[in-house]
Length: 99
Image (cartoon, rainbow, N blue to C red):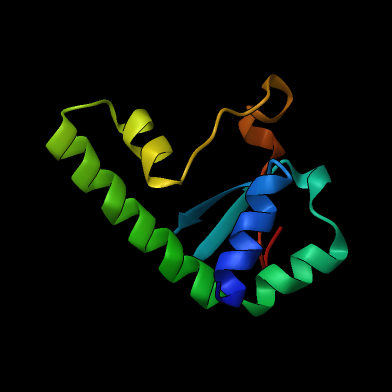
């Protein structure tokens, strides 16, 4: 497993969701990201963005082929997982490399 895949798996294992917004990575819940994790995310930012793009493309294909809602396609593609209620607040996200 590559470093970026291992980091992505670790983030998911900690209940942290990522979303690519332009050339920025948004993550939440903010409180779950330690300074060390944030540093690792910043160091792998370009690779994480590329991985997110691949997963977005996979979700689009699944959505079209299976004729399912986008959220379900993203879950199947590995982008989403059921988030606990406390991290569904959009104000609780932050960008890597920004505030």
